[in-house]
Figure 1 (cartoon, rainbow, N blue to C red):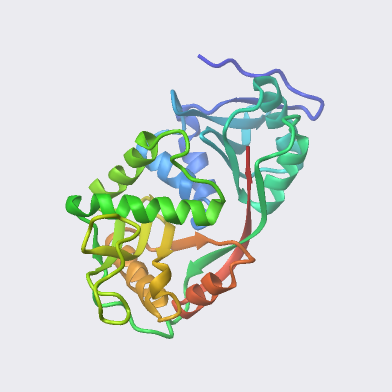
Figure 2: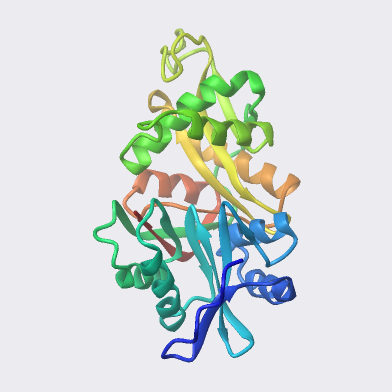
Length: 302
């Protein structure tokens, strides 16, 4: 059992959240479902604020007996209610633990502040300005008629597309150290009907489609998106990718309209995503699909 940390100079203290804090956490997260999609999914999946597993721990920062902020510390660090004062408490724990492969993800204010407090050396990457977009507007294009849920038979093609998407977006391959972990992630999304695709056997010129990215397949993924974070309260779309041969032809914006309609009908009333501010083509796609900026995220990768 993880022990509570003694109160710091601010009078705050850090400790794992307990089942008795479940209602408090739910109320906090539902004040901004799009901002807190990941933690809403974590809470819904576990049914309790008391989450201490091999994957990570859900901490609270307390003023006396009252929780004022929550932090998930695992493969990523994600927070709700974070302030510079609560970040000071969390930074003490993270610095004592030492650097590991993780990312700080969330609203830019607390992410960049917490990163500045870590004595971990330079991060691998910093994305300081990532518009948080919510599907609230009227799409300017129709939904793509051929978008569908990926099936088990699509796994090889979806995996190849996912590797290309990650490499292009992040700047390094997710399979540099082996493919098992990333394949497990992709397979899980497919098995949970959380990957949506448009596939094609013909290229944009009408001829046979290029033998890429899934070698040896006559049918390729030309658009994909994952409902990567999902609960009855909010969906966060991730892993959006368009085959390079099909870019600039409207498939991405029409695909996103169809993705949003599917998620709103089948999963949750809030559909969001976050993108990089420098990715102007993607931002235009999302705008055409009816997405409106409702905040700014940041990601710091270690």
